[in-house]
Length: 204
Image 1 (cartoon, one colour):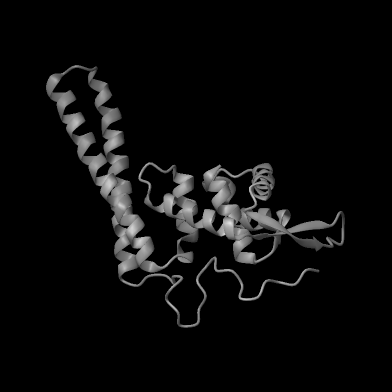
Image 2 (image 1 turned 90 degrees about the vertical axis):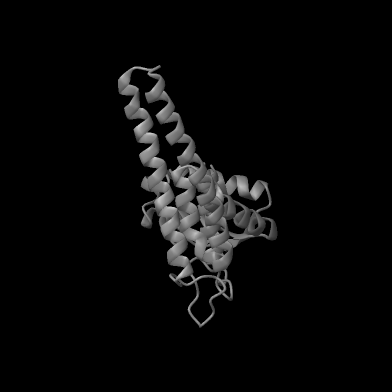
């Protein structure tokens, strides 16, 4: 639910005002049903839950031209707070599921560069600690010969996976430090990906 909530909040925020079908269409265009395991029903469920929590609010009705009118939503102040909270957790939590981390990467440009780097440094520190622990566990098991020998493959999988996450996170930090991507505080005219419009679109 965290990845879906973050992505739905981010899309509504980016459009200024959006209806459920618009959010769904945007996420499908990103292939989010594959890498974030988002189903169409979960998008509408997330919107309903966000309305209940007062994180998005009704912002008018749009004539679909081919069926029932579509309710428009916009993010509230509480929604903005939740968006930033989820974004920070997605980028900093070393235990975040891949789809949640992926959602964080998608909208990381909505934050200042140094903020994102700080979140990723926290993630990196935790990953490095996990790597060291896994290596010790693997070495101790091999030395003590307490488990069936093929279980070594399980430890090797964990070590390789953790090392890949560590290397990727370190690389992200380096790229951001070198000025990659347009971030929220960069200025210079170009709006970062995911930034809300300066003027919300008019209700049709």
